[in-house]
Image (cartoon, rainbow, N blue to C red; front, side, top):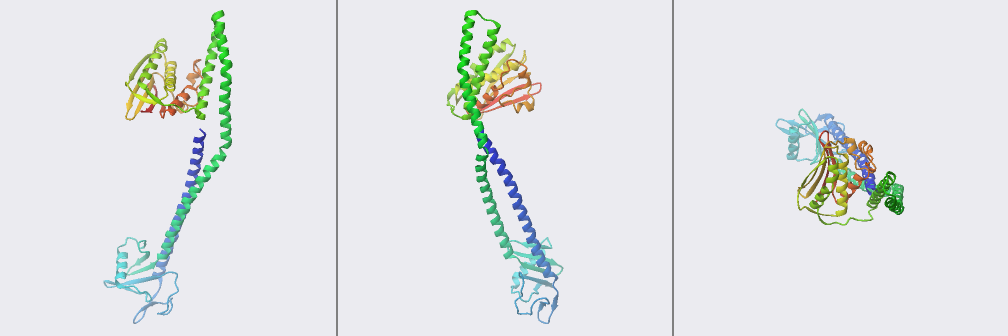
Length: 400
């Protein structure tokens, strides 16, 4: 239980951290991309906005240094104008061959967007009628990719660090709960052991008194309550051992078909007393590995509940079938409906639905908890299915 609680603590912490860090990462990437897009759009739009003064032999921009002097610019931008069927470079300080210029211009002409960026070559463009401006954004784009890589590494490292911190903090945070749980389990185990001896003496004395004085209602009532107390102590001890996992289950080959048939036959007498019919559909010679005593106890719990809570004249069906690599054991009782909200709590310890509370033989609400624990120890899954006006089925799927 504590291991499951610790896993849940770590899982919840990591999910929250993952969501927060992922949101921060993607927001940062989105804003950076927006800034980069705004940057190259500004560059090419500025290039388009520059006035061009035509000279006899060349073109130059009025707001730039004299021809022959290197321009002091943040990045390289250039533009071209269309003359007839060809494009002509109008940036005098740029050295670019005509084939490359024609390729860039042709690519920009067929582009759907008026302004865009080509990530494969790191060039941004913007076009207007008869003119195209370009900006070399290779350095900025390379820096953007490096930043993305760094953020990704930081993101992965942060998740790993938070995972380790979650493991450490979960161990410390659950320390009080672990201590309280151990004390509770120790108390249940010790108290159960201490109660077994005096209870055994009391039951033995009641048997002696009954043999000497004869049976009466007071002795019968005391003996019944004593036997119920003994059963409760045994159940508490079983659950305490299961929680502490001090006694691992020994799995041995056994014939599950014979065991189910034997237990079904054993409950025919109490079913007959309540005018119930028991039908069986058991696939023969199905063997598994498990603990025979524990599986016998599980069957006893399911069949005992079926007999107790099925109204007179009802029907109990027991089936054992094979589905691929699993055996499906089903105990069905008619005329019984368990609401959905009650089904979710049915296997909780000490939980009893109202119908069970109204019966003196309802028990303490530990039977199905023990059945679910036995199923878990055998790698099986025990669940309940209940439909209005049709009945209730307890279904266990156990691997072959």
